[in-house]
Length: 414
Image 1 (tube, rainbow, N blue to C red):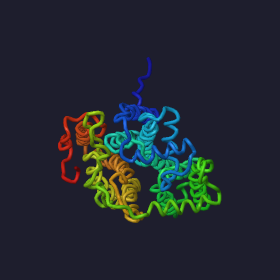
Image 2 (cartoon, rainbow, N blue to C red):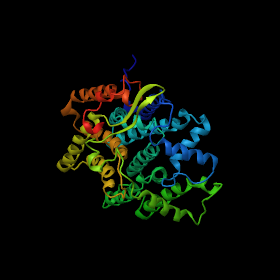
Image 3 (cartoon, one colour):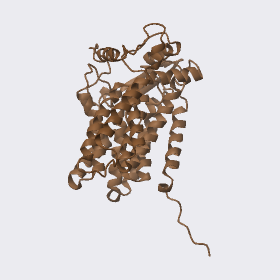
Image 4 (tube, helix red, strand yellow):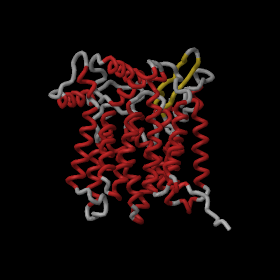
């Protein structure tokens, strides 16, 4: 008589599950990515810079590093100077972000179910969807950042120098997209030293000199390597002697005082989503369309409850994963209290908004038995809000110029 076998569990093949979620997310981001068929919001800066990179004509948009603009340029080179070319690799970056959230969620919850929950909430959170369909540098920064954190965290139990080095490289490449990722390199070093103190079972075989040397050296080399095209500019070409002074020039441009902007906002307002941004709201080819950079209220506001719950849970039982999840979000917001920028915008909250999905997954898994069917109801609410806001996330045709009132719940959302 054949022995009965139990049905396969999702934990048996986690990377098959993660891969399926990633492909599904990518197809969602690709659908109608060419709408609107015109430059949107900050694409005006980065598509122009991508053209300069393709022509190797000279420096353009020099306040930011090159990697994100190189990705846009590669899309144009492969698919033409069209909306599909501008945005193709943004969809890839968005899918890679979802994959990284799955990996990070699985790492912190220790279950594939937790990874699926984190990835699902990130996909329903609006911000990844919007950023995956526009050619902006933040879009390219985040997958490198999330994967860097996940790989460094995965190496904690194995002590794998290869995985630690890969994580360092990812953080360097994230910084090569946008400097907002640079503080995470320092945070990784401090986190390693703090968590390994008195615990040699963490990162076994990776002693502090080796770990910090790999983290700093590899991240810096990865960052520097992305400047290679600048050495071949037709004018004002980069030189080895000028590479470091150029970083200071970038800093000066990053910190210059800018005139007030309609959609500027303070970092303290971002968690409450007080001032989102209309990336687009105008007639396109005779049809009114809009793209609102906003988070899913269920995820953004519910995530704040999860942050508080994780901190409270850590105080009560000392669970490191609760602290790690909550601290990651807190750090992602807190760095903007010290970053010397004269203006802030809601899209700077993009990394923190995605980390909220991880915090939510950790909290929901931690208290799953107590929450019971409320988790499914919460996911249903998040999905319902996604369908409700979809017309102004995806630039669908709107009825008239005043249609925005349907989605602007507060005066500050206009």
